[in-house]
Amino acid sequence: MTGFKSGASDDDPLGSGDSDTETDTTDSSDITGAQSSTLSSGEPEVDSSQDKSSSSSPELPWIFDRSSITDGREKTVQLHLQQSTLDAQRQAKSDVESALGETVKKADLREAAIIVGLQQADDVTGILEEWGYGR
Image 1 (cartoon, helix red, strand yellow):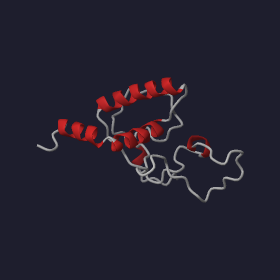
Image 2: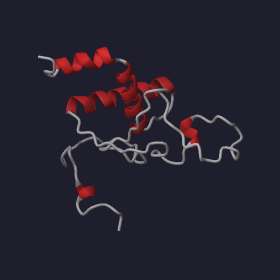
Image 3: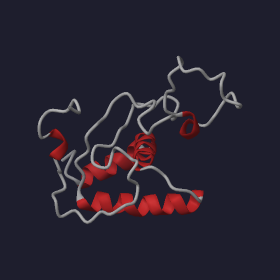
Image 4: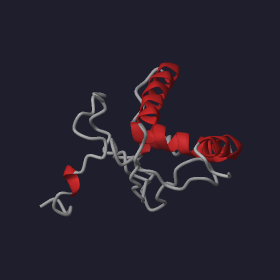
């Protein structure tokens, strides 16, 4: 028993014809991105109860200090995205990975994009106006 309601894990909001064949199989947030509210510092909150003394560096970057993609992400938020948004995400992921020279988890990309978006409220407002808000 996995702890999920019957049929919950079979839910595919993109349909079974989705051709997204990304190789990031360890990212548990393919459809349901895991985000937390990290607006104040721009960095994910780290559980202060974790024992940091066992690491050789007292301030490890978050991606190295966590044991899974969900560490430090207390809330899972389901995202239903337009195909154009998924296409933009795929392109941005490729661009970011090229710039960094390493693979980036989709959950990390999505959360970073949300943080940047929330810091750019004017740009977010512009998109929402294009969608019909503020009329």
